[in-house]
Image (cartoon, rainbow, N blue to C red; front, side, top):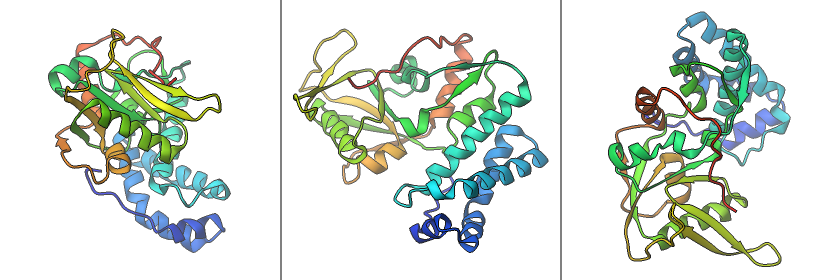
Length: 266
């Protein structure tokens, strides 16, 4: 993250899960300011942000028994915060909500892949882009921060088709099920009769196999780079975040089509 990630000791999370109020207070002391700043950035109101902060940590305490200490606690916390803020904004607006599952092109529009970010292919992760919905009508800056509160940077790699397959397989090995979204390429998982993955098939948007000898500019956020590209050299940090890309996209696209489905691995 831009302000530096805070790594929570797993023992604190175990303590929280086991009803330790001391562990809960220590986690609040470590992460409370970041959650407050996020709430204030979205709402623009000090008192409202303070109330939301208390609500969010109350939810953490309320659902402590369900926490898996092996997972990244900060990702979990900001997922809770994001969902709570989204519901808060909906209720405050008093308008119907259109359930949507945003296509990856909304997060990394092709126009910006080619012009602004100079990317051929872009990946994102379901933990970073999965949202329940957006209010009908105008999209506000706060909506974008609700969708993506983590402030991850965009990382660009120069990869061949074999490298892209390896990225997909590393994610599957770690997550067990596909959690990546992709734009600029179509990924198909070829399976044997038992369901085990035999191969990752890559095609361009016209249905042609990717050129095995070509080097592609591939973008992803720093969450993916950290978890699935560790030890691989050549990544370049771009001076932007997915939210900043979205702001530029929406500035030139006044109407957003919610009917597109994300490209999912088959």
